Amino acid sequence: MKPALEFLIKDEKVYSGALSCRGCGWSLLVRHLSSILGENTVYVAPASCFSIISGPYPLNDLKGNIVHTVFAAASATATGVRASLDRQGKEDTTVVILAGDGGTFDIGLQALSGAAARGENILYIVNNNGAYMNTGIQTSTATPYGAVTTTNPNGGFKRTWPKDLMGIIAAHNLPYAATGSLAHLEDLRRKMKKAKDTPGFRLLMIDGPCPPGHKTDPAMSISIGRLAVETRLFPLYEIEQQQYTINYIPEKEVPVTECLKHQGRFRHLFREENYPILEEIQEHTDWYWKQLLSKT
Ligand SMILES: Cc1ncc(C[n+]2csc(CCOP(=O)(O)OP(=O)(O)O)c2C)c(N)n1
Ligand SMILES: [Mg+2]
Image (cartoon, rainbow, N blue to C red; front, side, top):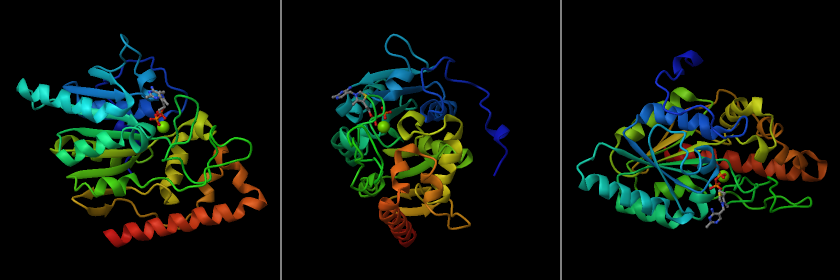
């Protein structure tokens, strides 16, 4: 692993004073993304925490153009922006969607699928923090099995597995899709660069730390992200035309509990009556990893 200094951003494209919570992944993600994309970029943002972090109109914390749009229409809005730029001969301007998991796995899925199937020349970034965080931690179809959200109150927790967005995306035969983690910056920045340089519809799904939603210590955001990769809860891989490449194979088999135990949203699973749920999560994680390996 390269030293962190290697990734110091020299040409900052994000103004200071962003409105994110302490330990939030959104700002760090956008700082790295914008340093790679440069200023010749149009950002399309459906409702999410990022709509607030970036500054509600007329504020803007990005040194780039940003179009705020409605939840369901991010990919349709970006399609229109792309068409108008192309019409003006500005094919070199990158159009990038910055969406949450709620806006992607649920509400924006139809428009996303349409734009992906049409092969629109758009980069789609999903910050997957595993719930509708901006409105108070409601369950989305990306919420992990076993997690508590405000829509699973009074001792309840999510009882279904998260939707396999990357599997759905792979089925669209995209030129490039990948997962990324803020704890693996070298890998993440390489993927951002590759996604920038690949024409067509590309998607990056980033593991999004969220201290208020995950009930974590803000100082641990990156270490928990690293544990998510080590435990294979969040594997790092790329998909090119349905061809999978795993980018990081953990040296040791680290149990999922090593990552879950730092997150208050899973605290109830460590009570004896819920041990079987922890076992199910381990089994599902092992199964998903085997599926991934079989696709490489
Ligand atoms: C049609 C519609 N329904 C609900 C909302 C309220 N709303 C704004 S942001 C948000 C949560 C978004 O969740 P997600 O996409 O996961 O992004 P995050 O906030 O977690 O970054 C919701 C429900 C809205 N803006 N528009
Ligand atoms: Mg979310």
